[in-house]
Amino acid sequence: MFSRSLHGAGAAFLFASLVCAQGGPDGHWEGTFAVNNREVGLSLDLAKNVKSEWTASMGMPSERATGLVVMDVAVNGKSVKFIAVELQMAKFDLTLGDDRTLKGTITTPQGPSVVEFKRTGPAKVELIPASPAVSKELEGDWEGLLQTPGRAFRMIFHFRNQTDKTVAATIDTPDSGAMGLPLNDVKQTGQKVEFGIKIAHGTFQGTLNPEGTELAGQFTHEENSLPLTLRKK
Image 1 (cartoon, rainbow, N blue to C red):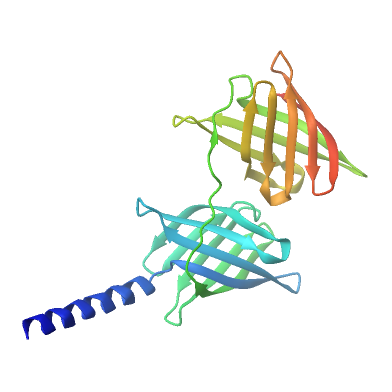
Image 2 (image 1 turned 90 degrees about the vertical axis):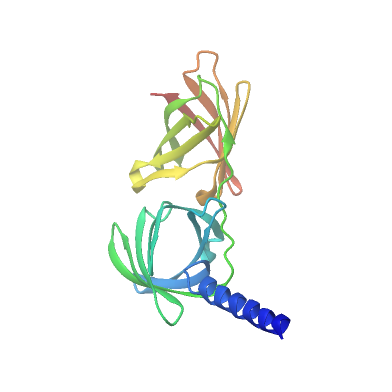
């Protein structure tokens, strides 16, 4: 009798735990919002890390983009707020409904739009792996122009070494209003420097001059490769 009661209590506890776990905003979510009279698909992965901190990443299936960077994640009860860095620093303000949806607004420079997500499975948060610290010559701010047919794009790169011996690396493209887009796979071997720009499906490979004032190389986007020279600011 005691054993049976204990088993029943354990099952009840497990059931209650599952209900609590399913009641939060963690998971893989899929949804849409309207832009210029067309629907744009988004995905959101939201989960706690080993430190019980909320982490998230996003995707745009139509652009084959996953692991888009999310910052300033704030979960308070049924409220979920965050900023999608690579989506023009869009601000999301969502509420978890009793129908297991996340509804709210996405605010971009073009204004607010209604967005709704439905949970489709467990979270698979994709965070950009940390890259090792770079040399003092590379650390700092770099600027250059990427000349494409008919247009030149101003690019500003930032490399900041962190106390944990990693580097925080980002790019600004002022002409398009994008700021703080993360770089991935930053690698420096002597004077050779390479990194990726995931949202643009692009990579850069170049060589730092002996004076540490110029970084010249090639920017590759899918099948296209263009020269790009950066100068330290």
